[in-house]
Image 1 (cartoon, rainbow, N blue to C red):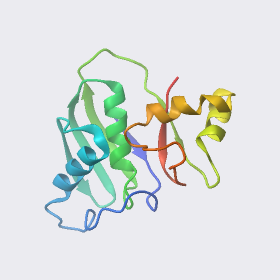
Image 2: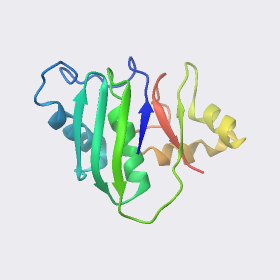
Image 3: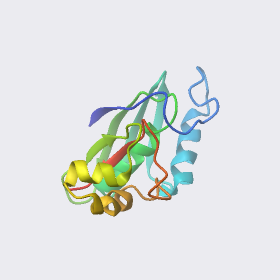
Image 4: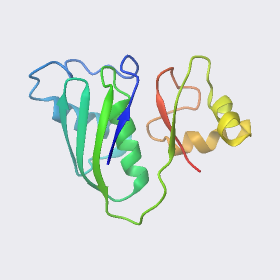
Length: 146
């Protein structure tokens, strides 16, 4: 249960998502989570300005983190209030890193693991949110597994 910050100007643009009074915002977010390949998790969302609150229950810490990233990496979202519970075994949360201009997964891997060749570990940890190791963008937040 925490509040995660995101780069508001970065991410996929979902038309009208954050328009005040948008009664379909919650449904649009759920569709977005399914569209990026995370299925139809048992979560509910509410939008208040540039903050998304997400509640519900998921099976694993990894699933929870990917849902939070899917919701936060949307243009116009500045924060995600994580109210998701995990029903499965307790595991340590992954670290997160924000992609900077000029970053590659290899460069991030070198910084966090001391080995540029570990980039595939980061890529796999962010699937299906990432479709290719070269398709990252400044402002995007990524999971960094241990």
